[in-house]
Amino acid sequence: MEAVRPWIAVVDDATAAVLMAAYAAQIDDTYIAYSGSPALSSQGDYVRVDGPGIWVEMSCQSGFEMPDTVHFHTVYRDHVNDYGGEFSF
Image 1 (tube, rainbow, N blue to C red):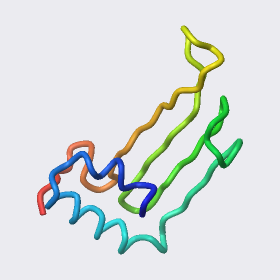
Image 2: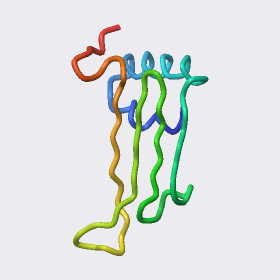
Image 3: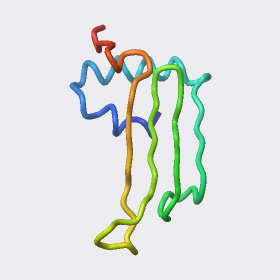
Image 4: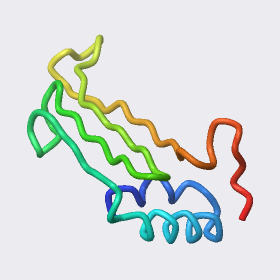
C-alpha cells in the first residue's frame, strides 16, 4: 500500500481515503512484478503493481541530454473508475 500511496496522494483527501481502502480490500488479488534491479536505479529497471482496481508502472530510462543519468517514467490508472468511468463514490 505504501508503494501506491504517492500516486493516490495527488487527489483530495476524501477521494484518496476511498481509493486506498478499495485497493487495500483487493490486496490479495494484487500482484507486484519487476525486472532488473529491485533498487530501481538502473537503466531498464521496471516495476508494476497490478490489481483488480489499481495499475501502477514505473521504469528507469536514461535521458537524452544526460545519458548517464536515470530518470523515471511512470503511470497510474484505475481499471474500474478510469477511461470513461468516474471517481464518484
